[in-house]
Length: 324
Image (tube, rainbow, N blue to C red):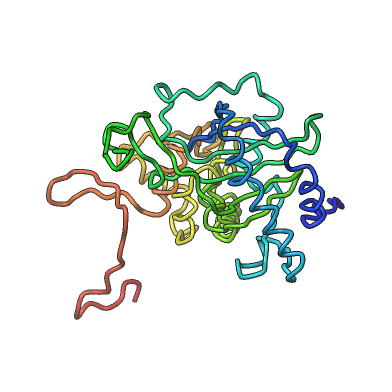
């Protein structure tokens, strides 16, 4: 049982407020694959950096302390006024992975270069804040959205009342709102929607997906490589999490799924004990499509199709229901 006390965000804000001008800030960008890149920032931006990433967040918490703001568990609550949501870092796989890479595998984190990595492909930015002696580390995370970017090739800048070509390759308007704060093992969520988009974490959908995973594991015999599992593969695929919401587990048996795959000429593999082999997310997609009956062959052309959406038709007029 975890007896760890959650971070007292109000005490934290009061303590950080007293040293905010001395904090050292490093920046990291990360892409949709949650690969972090170190990012250089000009000293000329120092005043803006602390205003955009730090001061407003501290002020919001300090103001909340005086107006009755409460902290509630993200998994048990919805966003509302005067409520700050909190969850545990270990529950949010992508966030935990990023922090681990930055803190413990820094030598593997390469420097961001736009000509190689493209800023438009970045998903978020992390400001790693610490005291001059290296202690008191915390992270402020903001979303990088395409709508806040200016591409040099198509953008103009206004100087002295005259439009001129935009000089930089890319311009980015830093969002001014507070979004996500990570302190030790806690994540504080100032913007629920942006938190969920940043880390592809939607607890209620994931909870239902976890239940479906348990049903699948109970109903079907599956085989995975030693370094993965059904749960791990599902957590990595947002579309699959959404699909599992509507999946009726068990309507297609293991034997029917294997026969179905053979009929559709799909590369579904089984081991010597008859377990369906799932090597990666592609295999998992195929398996879920099979037990959801998402493959058809056209009776007209004989072509095979994967069905993206289905609508069950009623029985034809004059026909008794099947099974009667």
